[in-house]
Amino acid sequence: MKEQVSGEDGKQVTVISTETGTPENDIGLFQDPNQRPRCFTSTFQECIFVLTTTMAIGQSSFFQGAVIVISATIGRDLHMNQAEITWITAGNSLTSGALLLAFGKVADMFGRRSMFITGMAGFTLALVVAASPTLQSTWTCSREFWASFPLRLFLPPAGNPLGFVGGMIVSGIATQVADWRAALWVLAVIYAAFTVLTIWTVPQDLAQKTRGFSWDSVKSLDPLGMILAMAGIALLSSSLSIAGDAPDGWKTPYVIVLLVLGVALIAGFLYWQSLFSTPLMPLHVWRDRNFSLLMGILALGFSGFVAAQFWMALYMQEVLNLGPLEITARLLPMVVNGVLVNIVCAFLLHRVSNKLIMLTGTVAYAVAFLIMSFTPDQGLYWAYYFVPLLLLVVGADCQFNVVNMYVMSSLPTSDQSLAGAIFNTVSKVAGNIGLGITTAIYNAIREGGSTSPIRPYLGPYWFAAASAGIAVFLVPFLKIGTQGHSEKDPSLSNEPDEELGGLEAQVKT
Image: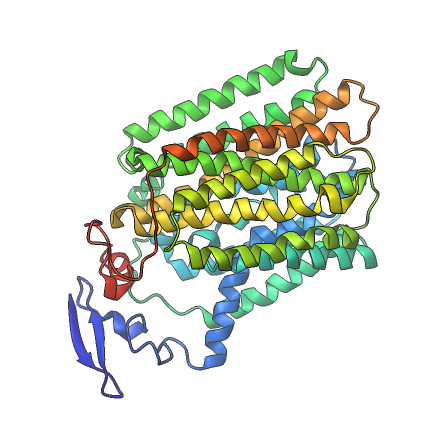
């Protein structure tokens, strides 16, 4: 229910009451936008809250940026093979992708603030465990589980570029001064501090009615769907990654078993989702043609994007023998250009056909991967890597902005939260699958007896170029125009009230 009341300064303020009659304005969600929300006692606390939530969404990017410049060093120190080195990055995508939807339901059960604090503390603890001189298996499971908790709750977009470049710089300096474990200790200290700040700055969510713990609430999490999804993707990715190191390659019995089981479990997950009353991923949202096409294009592009970053950084470490700070300096243009591309996209989304923006992103991907695919031995950075690095973020940011805007403005309100979670899940799972496939390609070329040190690294780029090429041919089937208009489009009957910017829908749900 909406009503107009007079604010403290005499201005009219919109107040929305929930079903229980509690004014949402009591917690500062709806009031004069020129006033500080009542849940914050000072401007300083408000600013720290924004910084804390930004650091939360930057968790995965922080870790990715930190390990991408030291993955070869970690592998040598822990005596890892190539498949195990790949899983340093792939494990994050697997667990966060598979658990993202489920933890959204967990947050509804126990409260978003509690889950946020638990996630920050768990991430810090996992970094401490991973940095300790323990078994190498710690690296495949310790950090990944906890990273998924806060991602469903807050999504400040600055967290991703901030996290990636911050992780590279912290890791580079710490490794240069001490060793790779020092980089993780520094990250642990940083996130321990932000965990304390989280307790102080994140306000109580008075509007949320938590369901508490019960057998019915556990069933609503769809634990079977969660297990099927994680196990299926893990087995499929593992079979692709380890085939090159197996005794008989793809003919090795356990590789075949893992591959078949992975595909079967993923198929079982999809079938179970069609039967269960509260599925982890309701399938009805895929009936939207544009959404399905956008997810397919995004998955094809992102599988190559993640793989290209990983293999490029690994090549710089293993073949060029560059240090972490040197690699950070070479990858930095990608981060800087990413910020600029996001600004340009924000300016163009409601002025230029988003179909054209999507095409620009897919073509940028394809051109970047093709240039990298022709890199010769001792190829110059400025000729074969600088331009592709700039184009890679054009592809990623163009696609992400278009898909995100479609989810937030074109889908029915009832499907937006679900589609947003699927959007994030697909991007992470696609990156995981891409790393698995490119690891198999790398191992196959390396075992083929190539004399060129760079040749095994070019195979993953060719895979990425092929994926981007397929995505280019899917773009013409999209039927989307401009998005993100300041005025409500009357043709979108399911759009939330313009005055509330979509928040009314969230309160009602």
